[in-house]
Structure formats: structure tokens, C-alpha cells
Length: 351
Image (cartoon, rainbow, N blue to C red; front, side, top):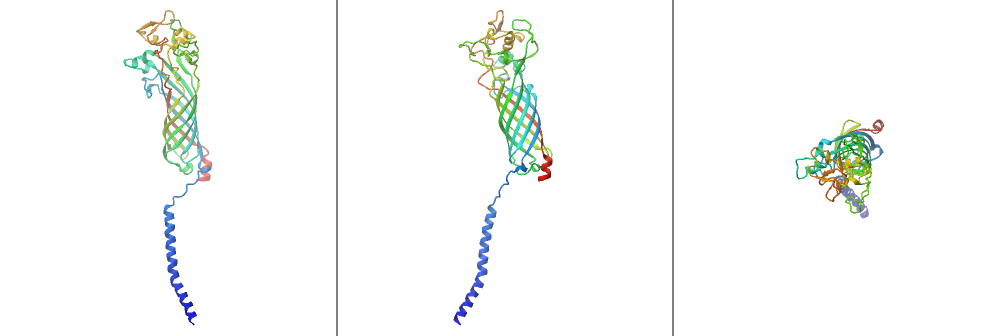
């Protein structure tokens, strides 16, 4: 009988204690789960194929040149009046929430002129550039590949892309260039030039002695013809705006840091005129005599009967045509309209 009472008592205690124990265990479990939920940040969905897309763009560009024929010797000096248009065709591939690769072909013209840009009244600097009186144009054909980083990310498909985002870009470019200048009416001896008034290619003339026989003691000794195919580093910033469901409008400003100092055919020192290979090369190398009233301080040149302005048109270590320590740069300001390719397929499948 005593054993029976003990069994009944144990069962009663178990019935009383179990709900309380269960409730306590449930509270602990809920509290633990709440902490896990509060600290959970979720996982970003993979940027799958359905979120990647390509686009084709057309750009209108404004191009400016920075180099030896700029108004002032500062690196940031340029003549806005010589801004020239350019056209571009681009293809982009968006492969991440912030990341895009863009390949682009651009055709543009660079221009510069001492007589137009330099201040002849600036006796400290401008007058020397004005007296040099060099000029050029250069039609550049550029192929670039840049990586674009968006400030605002898009984790969804192109349909849900952000309304606008600033971006930065950096890449590499290859370009072909060919500096030219208009030939004067006569050579330095006053004889008519067959090329008078025509745009002539400057590289093949060797205006700084590239095709001349120079002595080891000459300032430009060892000079070689510059290459027309060159590399550059494009970089800059911009902003892209969602124009409609399948079109974007973007604007950016970028610089091309080149590895050549001959976008303008100017880099080193003058050489003696008789060392140049032709009357046309001599006339395109030294152009101070074309200015009205010059030379004001004449000295004999190495050409019989021809005087040149002191400091120009003759071999001497201080007679500089340009500054070979700096590389040329050009700036490209672009407005681009892009259309997303394959939009119909993506819209039907993933919207």
C-alpha cells in the first residue's frame, strides 16, 4: 500500500512540475532564437546570369590637349578655344552589382597653336611661346578598355537598376596619332613650297633631327623617330542616369595620360637647320620668321642668307622647342546614350 502511495505522489509531482519546466524551456528557446534573428543580416544573392547584361552606346565628346603648345607651362594649362569634337562607340558588360567593363572606340582631333594661345604681352613666359609660333593638329583613333565602379549598387536585374549613380573608371588604351601642320607659302630662303597651305605629316620630316646625322655632342644626339601607335591610361569620373526602361544617359570627364611627348611633334631642342633633310622640314621646324616683324634679334643660321631669332632655329643646349620631361595628356568630356541589349528576352523571363 505504501508503494502505491509513493507512485501516485511521484506522478502528481511530475504532472505539476512538467508544465512549468516546459514553459521555462520554451522561454529560453524563444529568447535564443530572437537573438539569432536580431543579429541575422541575410546573405546576398549571387549575381547570376539573369542579372548580367550588355549595352551598346554612342557618345559625343569634347577633347582638349595638354602639352608643349599650351598657353602656359603648367600641366593643367589648355586653350579652351581649341576644344574639338569627337565621336565614340562603346560596348559594355555589367557583371556585378557595381562593376562594368566597357570597350570603346573613339575618333577625335587635338589642336594647338602658339600664335593663338600664347600671350605675346606676357614678357615673363608667353612671349617666348608666341615667338616659337608652332602649331599642329592630330587626328587620334583610340581603342580603350576600362573598368567602371558604381557608387550605388544594383543587386537585381536591369529592370530594377538604380535611377542614377556616380561612377569612377580606370583602364588602358591604345591609340594611333599623326601630328600635322599647315605648310607656309615659302621655305626659309623665300622659295615657294609645293606643299604651301596643305596639311603635311610632321613625323616623317624629323623636325627635331630624327632622320638627321647628329654628333655625339649635339643636344638631340640619339633621338629616334617617335611611334605613331602609343599606349595611354584613361581615368576619370562621371554619372549615369536611367533614361527609361532600356536606355541610360551618362556624362563623364576623363584624362588620357599618354607615354609620348609627341602628340604635338614638339619635345626636345632645335637643331641647326642645315642638318634637316629638306626645305620643308626646315620650314616646319622653325617658324618664327613667319611672324610679322620677326626676327627682332636676328643671328645668322647655318643656312646661307637666312637669319633666325636668337634662341630659336639653331643648335644650343638652351634653345628648347619643348620640354621632354613631361608627357602629353588629352582630356575627353563625354555624353553617352546607351541601350541595353536583349531587353525583350530578359523582361519576359525575369521581370
